[in-house]
Image 1 (cartoon, one colour):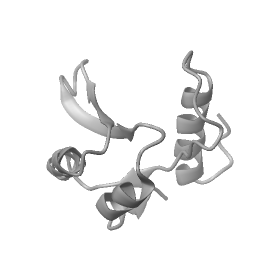
Image 2 (tube, rainbow, N blue to C red):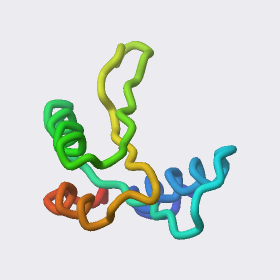
Image 3 (cartoon, rainbow, N blue to C red):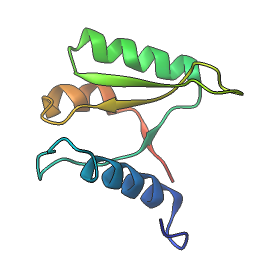
Length: 96
């Protein structure tokens, strides 16, 4: 990963690289966007909103210390209803 680009670009490119290098065939139109919340509690609330809106997602928890099971990120599965996802994600900020 290049170090000479902004943090948000680094995050988006890492997401893109992880998806593109996975054994599953992701659709070509899959997007990689890094959005932020301030706290784990806000992230948990966001996961709840995904559940209520029936948006397929994966909650990422870090098993190792010092995080020991803490919720760290949410990944939205490709081919999700983009309108529903935008309604849930609209208030979030891009990672910069």
